[in-house]
Length: 157
Image (cartoon, rainbow, N blue to C red; front, side, top):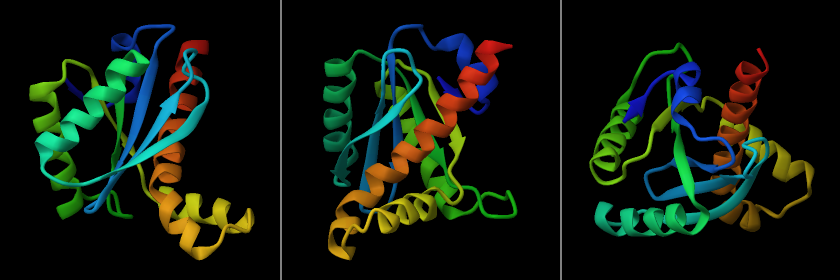
């Protein structure tokens, strides 16, 4: 099930389980993992984009290993909030994922997530070469943490 509102997502996510965050790129998929209280996001891995079926196997392994109850998928809106080609590609990926994985897929605005992740890595004095290896999973962490913060805000109300 695809969910476009984080407010609606809290109804579908089970407490005391984990969610993953995905930063979908054209060459890689950054993956981040929440803790069981769905409070803290941590970088997990980078999956090289290949055939969808192969990427699905890798995602399914993560879902099974960590008892995942939902997927936060970075939603690449343009700066003026319009949808572009990347948004359409993300929507197509989500539709394909929805056919194979019976978990809620929640879109989360990812504007400037890569910029923010890169800034953190630069401030940590990470070399340019190392940043290229880390940037996608750090962006996924940034995306996931934003969604978790928002979910927890609604749960406190």
